[in-house]
Image (cartoon, rainbow, N blue to C red; front, side, top):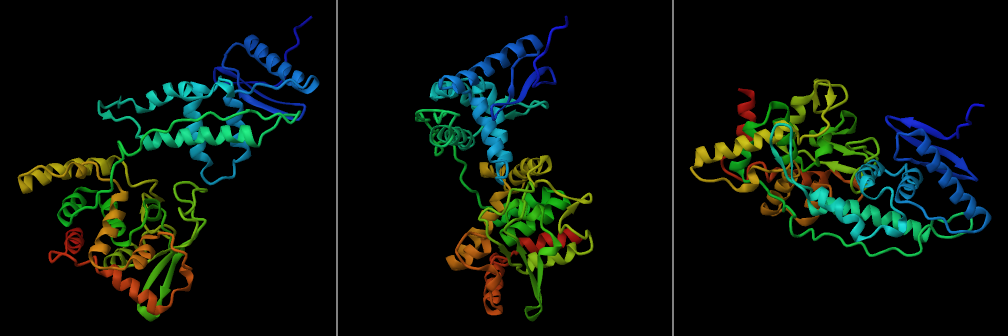
Length: 392
């Protein structure tokens, strides 16, 4: 007689996975083996645990993988669930098989060491390990899941998945935190010169509009609002804007008003007609991110050009300038130009409690005037020089 197999096992790649509902409880996890026989033994063990919990009231010991899977299923509609899934996937090889009662600092230490370790890319470039902030984001996900296990999730007998949550130690973020680096006018000129055309235009817009990276990459023409009485337009980015993914959302969950100074306005006019949907299209699509290999290459070239032109070493942060530093550059120039904090908050898209759709013409005029203060705060007006160079 042929041997009867157990249902609920699926081979994904080289590993068997469980996908089975037992007594109202869903088991959705990896067995960790490519052997069907071993996978069946694993499933039998899990079924026996559920039976004992149901019949005898025995508190079932859950694994971290079970808790992580339940979290992803329960919170799948969260805007940032894709990022949580990424961190939980990275954690799984280190703690996936462990019982929840064994998740502590000692269990997480190998993961931390792995994330902090420097690596070498395929082209031989050294890639530094993750910053403490990045590691802490993953550890915060661990704490979040463990708290749910102790405070919310219950088995069939109303026992918590975890009795107590251990104290998980976070890394000191101040030790390796990279401070914002606003560019000087000369640094901006040299750096922007090395960027390819599509990135140069986007960067120039970003440093004059104070937008976040994804607000530039995914800027849509449908968000533009004409203000005929002022002879200009503004962009109103909706609160549900998807950012890098469809569910990312605007950072502050509020509509984002983008005011155009003279430079930003000229860039917008220059982009008209290039695409029906995207303001800054690249090869027919919206750019996924500005910080790509071309951006990183331009940083390196700009540092070398700085030394050639000025005969001295550039600031070390010029070679590692980030896309977000352009937003900090815009903010610092506004402050140096005497723009009030309230106006800076609006221009930078910071949460300030105001209703962006209720601005009067006078208020918009004031904001445009404030934004224009950073166009010619330097007598050489390097941003205008860059535009002239682009046209030539």
